[in-house]
Image (cartoon, rainbow, N blue to C red):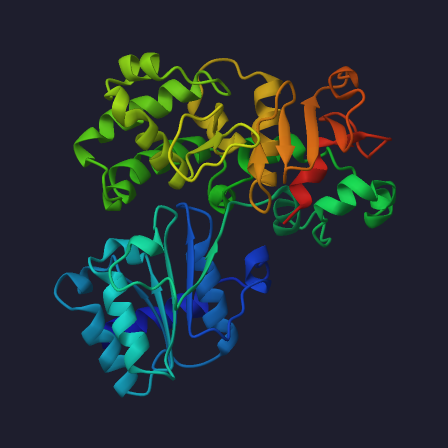
Length: 397
């Protein structure tokens, strides 16, 4: 236990605090049980360590423990938590909980035993709290941490620091957007770099090897994290990787389940489930038709990779600008809003707004006569009528 606390103390002391993710300011840190899930590499661990550092207390009072540490192969979380509390612990921060069997049940036991112990945990985006032992769903305040928005990328690199912009401002009051930015700000200056390298915070550690690391991250998610999903047969991990590769060469596309099954060698009765698993792991995004409930698993209208960085890392074919534009739009907007596929238009947001995404030559033909409809262009700097710049959707969070 002492070794764990010493490691916690070192990690907290070493974590940088100059830049904090948007979620840091959104969480009600007074809640007794907080969960943060997200894909690998999005910055969950850093966020927890920053919070502990801000508390400014010794590790005996507030400790960070990673449940994939070898210590927990021979010690239980429950016993460790008991000892921590009995020696004066107040704040228990648990990382990588999905790596520990029965984690939800033991966290529930600690929560129920000690009403003055605060527990904050992180886990893979594949975690479904409602299906875990012990039923934490009534107790926990859950959040999800996506990758960096374009706004956060600019802030982290010291290029620009402005507040997020709401969808209502973008669609209903967009003529004032120019005044929200410094006069010398050129919104497209760093945009292409973000699309290639800016979504995962770790890119700054080794930009040259970034794409290789992303491909390794995909393999880790499929071979390690997804093993925790009930219903996923880890023996099919190789087939799942093949499925991702197939998708990457064709996105965005309307899936043909029979052909996908043949190419990936995954039984067609399992393809829909596996696509759902990949979306839960935040490797792909599934777009469903407007007006259709997705309470039960069904075939999506289109499949995208999760983000443009994955596109550049995995897709071997020459990427079309259209694919990059649409992937960016869906990735950034779907964090806070519901996005669907309407008939003859690229995207519908919140069942209210219609967006047709394109380049400089994109006209109003497809949205003519439609209300709350906009053309989104990747080459314009600021709104003009119902023509909106693509980059502005990277400022929603």
